[in-house]
Image 1: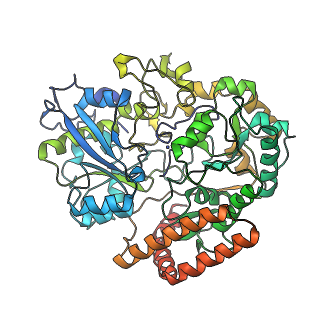
Image 2 (image 1 turned 135 degrees about the horizontal axis):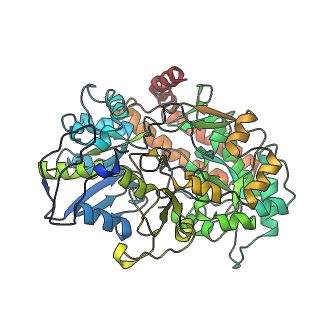
Length: 584
């Protein structure tokens, strides 16, 4: 899964990842619950209304969603909002947790109904368009003003879809800040350690990953358990996000200037190398995890647990190294920042971070409507999507409900105590808002049309709670002040930029070549081998065993057609690299 970003030291926009657009909000559609009729929203610029749509009958929407970490009907506070507004139940079908995502995808495609709503990676969506599984949006998009706010990005993406003249899919995570902007307060993937523990072991300057492991070793030796006596480890990993490779490794390649794309590593300099390049970052970071395990720093549950298990451990402070910015939300708060116990970035001198710009054009996934839906349901789904891209819908996704999660003070949004703690503690939701635990009722779709860094026209500030001026002020704590004093920068973005340790590359969202039948088979076989071998190498008995397993893996890959796959992916990503060069 491609995860939502956090940009605050204390509070996360992890609304999606933990479970991980609009015109004026006065123009968004409104209903009084089931049994009403709704018209699509109109904008001040005069977008036309569509005919009234009946909401008399509950509509159970089959939502095929490659981003979801949950399978079943959306419940809780978010489910209640959707039910009250649209009389819809969102039945989320999640290949990521289904057991065999590839088989589920093929079976549903063969049946001619992948889903009513569908979230897919770009290439798979293109394949579904060509197979006739996706509804044409060309003649109706103009009737939905919140979606039209991102018209240029939507049309740019769809110009590469089908014959280039129609609109089928809506990119996800769009913003209107510009194609090369990076507005976040923190980088996405980088080492983070509890400030108190880092200082406890002498706050060492880290030159490389060996120094990082030594620092973590000292921390774990001093704290083999959390305060409750539960075993704690420097590193805890999970398998359920793996795709064609070991995802935990792939995210860390960015520390050293390369991003994994299929079978290749793409560098900040637009270079392309096979994932199996022994001088590349995949090998380097796989060996980092192997070395960590040799030092006793890897949670022995890593090979069998899922993401939700790791979330629980982070909430209980049983994990000492974070590497995603949005992991902050499972522990950090302003109160803990004042205690000096928040997690925070610790620079590693030899890193050159591969950091993509904010996803102006989208993040590589898209949402669409299935071609099999009835005309009436087609309109209901479009009305839902338009609301999903409205200021009201976007703010709910990236913050939650007013009153419980935030209040409005002098025109500014301010997080409540429950809002600050919603990812790190049990927050009870009143029955009238849906009841249950806030996290359990969180938006399980786990992807948005509009990114958290986009500007809410109602406030003039980003949607993401971490970027609200009130939150930034709250986050000026003992932790951040001492960090700034030590490292001489306001935040990690400033530090890494000023020290030549980060390269921002333009985020480009285009439809890339679809795998041929032969390439698809090769990719599946090679991916299964890479994932299996990577996990075994983390737990190799010694360095000789590690290197032997690497060599065996690369030799077996050669026999599966690896060279053809690398050649295909090198050509596949060439248009993206060309577009990136043109955007710089």
